[in-house]
Image (cartoon, rainbow, N blue to C red):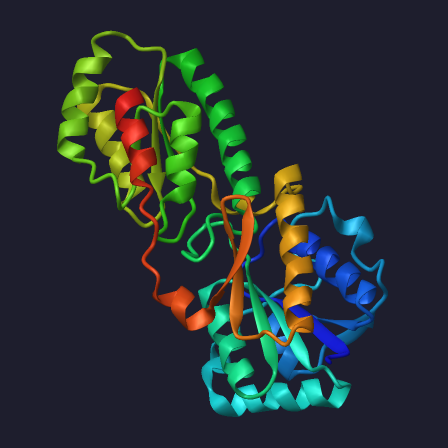
Length: 319
């Protein structure tokens, strides 16, 4: 029976990570475990930035975005030599299991450690919602609400000037934030890797739309889909619309976690400790509807991305 569990956050930060910490730490102490935080992700694991924490460590952090234990990227962690260095650090503290909150790269590190004798559980921490083994990731709901709030404000000012607004949204090749936000804000156009938008056709439609003097036009674009600056310039030049580009950037990663985010993150953190207590490792936790599930990490990484064809269909019907 394991007695000591470590927790780290890795990769990009996401609202809800602190809530997952809370759920894990509280559950750990309920099950008579000693709980440790590892600061700065896998780098902190290698560099021995490890601290034992009290059961109330994260109680005051439930409304804070980001990650209080900090995060960092360590590409070298894919090397066996570095993984063994991390294991020696864990053994020094007597830590027998690890909870890793992060994305796909973080999951692979957790699997490799499990294969070397340290049971690990992965939690899906990323605003992009690009982990196929979970309907929703830690951070997505909060980031989506942040995007919608920002876009609503952009629409307010655009409609005051009859403008066209182009808004670039995060996602790192995953269109979920853009697709969900586009439906929620009634966007005229949603441009992602899945919508297959014909820009020439869109320009032609905008030329015709300009003749009707619309209140505003809203175009949401998933980052890395196309050059949004060039698109904005082309719309301005060819359609006559006063067109402005807004790149939301890292504002999407910050902010207080939503209530739903907090609940789901706490549930995931708690469930991770329960699984480790049962001797289960090398898996990642996800949501399937209202249920929590776990999947072997290798199997999870092979799953195809959900293209949300139902939402794309809804978008086509309401635009």
